Length: 294
Image: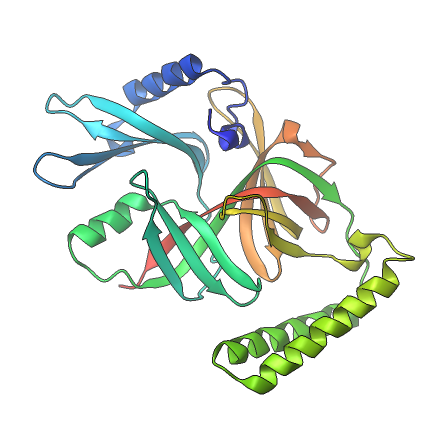
């Protein structure tokens, strides 16, 4: 089974034959509005069945529709859609090798790394490619699926400290942008800041807990390039229910390194009680829907 299927409320499906039965049932019950078909050439088409299990989340089934209208599934993926703008940074899209799936690459200075995510609105992008339309990206809505997470208490800060941190973050983002353009002074300043930061952390970690020093982080995790270990502040949360299994899923709106996105995690996989103001720590599979320039 797909590792992150449990994040949208299908944790009980562990065996291949159970998942095959589930996919067949979802295809059989799918309404016409849930099915999207794209003719790739005279003999090949790409068919997507979007089976919603809870608001904005469920399973995408991809395959081919034959001449009799029968959908033959080839692969499936859990999906989770966010409606909040996450990034307006430069974004490029590339196809994966094996399947008709795509990855997006965000040149996001606030995170400090090139942010890679699985492209959720594949059909829309593929349709633009076939029509030879412009695929310039205006902005991206990011979301993530998690199968293991925990809740951390917030770091206590005064209003002045919050404002100072915000200003420092903006200044660092500007320095990173300047360094990318080849500004040697900016590169030197960033290097000195990193050395000072390492020195401060080395001193503080002797007396303080690491999570009181690092209040937010965004790091690649494992060998797959679209998975990350994060710590971020919870801005909003909802508890929704999978209509098919009855499992409860948390929809957490997270602010991580000034990037806002949503995370879906099964209630049974989250340790602690989430509340606005507390922090989420866990590993996520990042996906996103791109909004194209008109």
